[in-house]
Length: 370
Ligand code: GTP
Image (cartoon, rainbow, N blue to C red):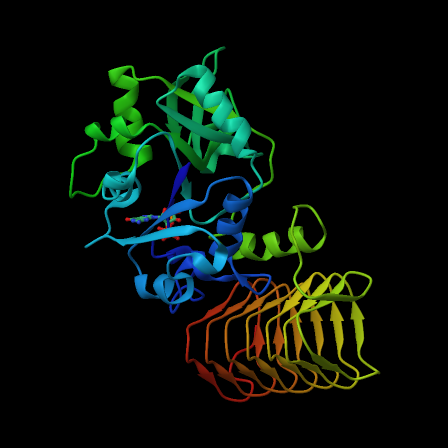
């Protein structure tokens, strides 16, 4: 069985984290998200995967190659220009030879793929769309079905009075390749606004597969932090790398931790982490490889990528640091702040309320406060 993963988008909602790296390559608990996804597919019996790449395509080739490191066959196919979700699959149609899974490359889910495939076959469906319930469907595309689960209607961002279901498109499909005859070649074309409405008109059978499996779109800053918290508190199945050195505290290699530092799990520390005197690391928190946490820092609910250096007394709460940042003494970074790569912050800056710093930003002492 083959799968196509759509990974060509620009990830604009997650900027500045996606300025230098495509969204599916960003780390999830210190591992590129796409690797986690590929290993999950391999473990569920899908060992040939086509990655439809476009934005920062070389990053995929450099990290994943032909897939042999992950014990699978990988085709990395670059579009000459962005073709949209359906156009991207049309572009790799020549590699498809039967029912094929198509995944959005920014969805974290532990959906039962075998059950979805059985459902697709039993219904003799042409397109099966995985559906997930959400509390507030008004921000999403709603999918309406009949009693037999055949799709009847799509409602984009419905009004409250039009709601009669809470099931939204969860971004995993099983598709019979012959439906790509409806997709114009060499053009930008989307599933949601293009192919699916066309299939409602042609009458090709299209079914919805509702599931209560874990589901999160990692492509927005709050959900990127939330998904780390969910993994660390055990809401989603996850194989932690490294060694568990205390209750829900993992180290992926070697770390130097001062005896007076306090670490309260769940916490994951990358190889080469240094934690200095009196620092407090409170979970759920992930420290990337080679991060250096200065004396008396307070870190809670944060995600740090690799090579960050924090001077003394820094507070970091519910925020993300990209790569290779230098954070001056007593900076206070909280409340969904996102710092890109290679930033240098002088002492005592205060960054809160979802503020975002673009890569390479330099701030003098006390330059920003709220
Ligand atoms: P935003 O800019 O933040 O909306 O992110 P995005 O465009 O990267 O993601 P979006 O949620 O819109 O798209 C869903 C999935 O389809 C993501 O995994 C994208 O990488 C992928 N995708 C979107 N557009 C294209 C495209 O033109 N070509 C390819 N190959 N993939 C795409």
